[in-house]
Amino acid sequence: MNMKISNDIVLVVDDSPDALSLINDALEDAGMDVLVALEGRQALTIAKRIRPDIILLDAIMPNMDGFETCVALKADPSLSSIPVIFMTGLTDTCDLVRGLEAGGVDYLTKPINPSELLARMKVHLNNARQTTNVQNALDSSGQYLMTLNFAGSVLWGSPQAHAQLARAGMDESWLKAELPPKLIPVLAEPNLSQNNIKLEKDEQSIELKVLSLQENNQILVRLIDGDRLSGSALLKDKLEITDRESEVLHWIANGKTNRDIAEILGMSPRTVNKHLEQLFPKLGVENRTAAAGVALRILAVVDS
Figure 1 (tube, rainbow, N blue to C red):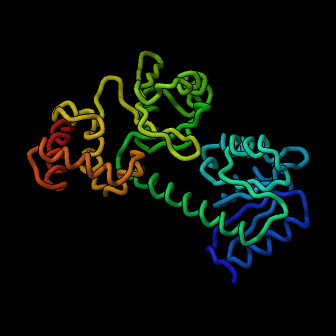
Figure 2: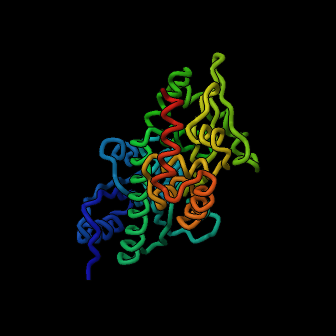
Figure 3: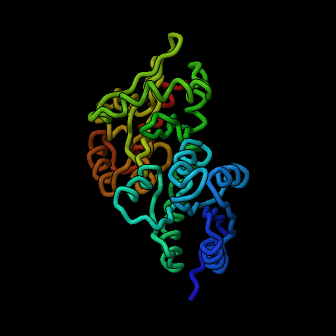
């Protein structure tokens, strides 16, 4: 029985015609649209022109191997969120680890088993869709949020975050050239989540608050204007509640469900509910609707 996935676009990168033929047939039978590249540079060109939903990448290829290709993909903000599955005949643990460190989400050893390949792809496509849904929610929620990697590169940022950075003179060229060397030593510190990261340029300052560590070692941060408290910080200041309670309350005020909040803040829905149980008596309310009303009144006064 064939496993039907959908009309997702998959880019297969392999210098072996036999391997390409086998994988192409399996993917087309599963209802997927297939793009093919024979080496790394060609794969990068194709991915920039037609963004695939997932990439199957051979580790060993001439000119530009799979490891180099994956690193280049993850360095491009427009391509970095695409899941990459390595296909390799290498079996040494160090080679497999190298693929994961380059940014791969999984690996399959050759010869490829089509059924196993489709099953793995289905899992990673679903994970990628969930991540995209959360990012779309953040984009529309008016939040100053972005994700970084441990190399100090910005992988994604909400429109509000990019606008705030631009107002501080931190444009795209600054983010690419100046931000990574400032962030790399800070991101390597063991107490990363406990201290805000301060960025300064031309007497303008912005602080980054680490919210959570996401999949693939991506770091979710919130931007705080150096001269202005963020929404959750305002709630904490006015209501004398904890950091986590203020964050949960802020998302409640933005109409998010417990599951949405759990994904955004990197906790379980049960933990979100426990925070709410502690919040209600502190606010003198009995339900989330009333709690949201308290938060919205505070935020409305500050924004006016």
